[in-house]
Structure formats: structure tokens, C-alpha cells
Length: 266
Image 1 (cartoon, rainbow, N blue to C red):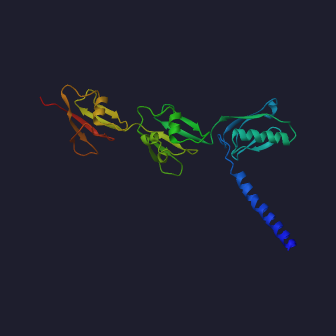
Image 2 (cartoon, rainbow, N blue to C red; image 1 turned 60 degrees about the horizontal axis):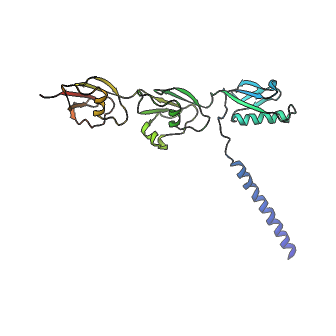
């Protein structure tokens, strides 16, 4: 009985150990990825080995994701951050017996492989590197926000997907479904503002860019107000090519509306 019990106990212990190994491995693999810009082909980098200038290099990552270093030869840079690459280079210098405890720094000189284009009616159009997770709103703020002549929406152009229209008000409200995470190669484009047209008895007739929620009354103010012979209570609107109808000045305008302020009756 005691021998059988001992055998069963040994099998139980072995089973516990065997089951524990995958759990430990899974926990290790679940560690978060290193934060920072992830290097890729065509990025330009400078690798500095302090006190050993001949061991450093300024180079561009090749199409296969590698660089060639003095002393240690080919190094896989793609998929690493600058901190991760510095750690790898230091390890190879040490393991190869070239240097003892080298101090290595990697600076990114040119961001190419992972970036987003922000273009159109923003204050500072730019190619923005994805050095951390960015949403559409983040990049609009980073490039100085939308100009007064910009639209009330932004167009997201993404390879392999249909163009998406993102409403600025929804972005500002923090609606995540309308404020997507950016991917390498994305383009955010802010077009010219939609226009309306004001004619008749206003001081500055012509086209006016629409801002979010603009009413006819607000549009009249932008047009310099109604003339002395005009009446803000007599406003006609033609929308979508339809026949002109009388409307209230509190109505919200739409793209390509034609607004006519009529003369007052004396």
C-alpha cells in the first residue's frame, strides 16, 4: 500500500510540474511590447557607441529589415524600437568579445516606414511618425488643427479600404468609433470648407464657408449683415436645385445652399 501510494504521489508531483511550465511560459509571453516607434525598412538611424566611434554607424535600414554594423556585421533592426536595437547591438558587441559593457544609443534620423500623412486645410501639414498610438484627433491637434477655411469633416484614406468621412464634432466629443487609431500609410485629408451662396440685400454677397451648425442668421452676419433696404425676415432658399422657398433664418444651412435676402416693403 505504501509503495503504491508513493508511486502515485510521484506521478502527481510530475503532473503538477508539467502543467506549471506552460503557465509560466504564457505569463512571460504576455509581457507588453516595448513602447516607442517600431523601426522598419527605409528608416534612417544613427548608432552611437560611446567611447568607440569606429563601432557606430549612420545608415538606412534595408528592404529586408537589416543593417550592417562594423565589427558585428548584419543586424536585424526591423520590428525593434530604438531602445531595443541599442540593447541588441550592445549584446552582440559583448558576446562577440569586442567590447566590455558598451554603452549604445540609437537615434532615429528619418521616419519612413511607419508614418501618417496629414494634408489639406490644417495649420501645419506634415508626415507624422507613429512613435506611439495616435487617433485621428491626436494628429489633427499635433498638426495645428483645422484652418478656418477647412471643412467640418476630415477624410481618412487607407490602403485597401473605402475613403471614410470623419465628422469633426464627433471627434471632439470623443466618440471612438469616429476617431480611429491610425495605421502606417494612412492619410488624413481636410478639404476646403463646404460653401453656401448668399445673394440679394446683404453687404457682402458671395460664397461663405460653412462651419458646424451654422444657421442662415449666422451666415447673414458673416456676409456683413442685411442692407438698409433688406429684410432678415424675408429670406429665400434654394436647395439641391429645387425652387426657391421662403424660410426662417434659424434654419441650419447645408452645402451649396443658395440664400437670397429680399428687399423690405416700405
